[in-house]
Image: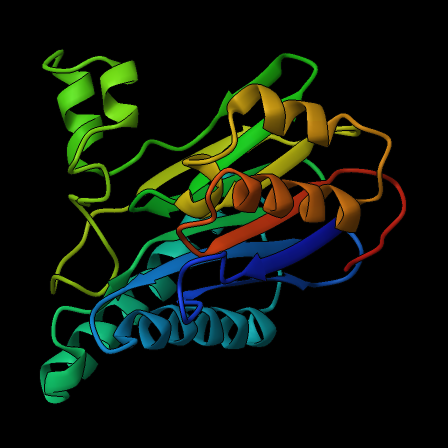
Length: 250
């Protein structure tokens, strides 16, 4: 399984509050994560970093025996619940971190399947023989308005409250996370990203980059460059996984 993780602070922001990574157990088992932090005084950076560090630690300590999607969901539920309480408690104890939180999209991938956890508006896309599809659902005010029919998807692109989240990790003591398992097969690509990419690069453009003959690091570079060329107002984070016989990471 090939993988690459890249993040960029963009052209406007002074700091990068995104975080992420790809963590392996052997060649065909990995955990990919993107977290987009939020909160004043760079508290978003603290929330996203706490999330990635805790997930990496738990992953390295796990027995890595994920035989079924149910195993993957149970593992993700346990660690995400623990992280949520950790961030929530930290924010209560430190006034400068009050209200901090983070989005999270995580993909636990085996040779046969990927189980995806998501909260917030960081996304997961799948490129397979069935085409390019968005796997996750945004937990945002604008997406709720689209689903209820109050505004169109076109209206959503320029809505003034586009960045208002309805769910995030660490902002409430109890949380609801979406879990979904998809087939992951030879030749498929999985793309995880923060909204710094998805707000600036279209689905067709993402698909074209994934299907190009470039290396995974160059694909990630190209996506980040495109987001920056289209404004780069936000931090931009990209993880690309490719299901294949070999293994490389970057």
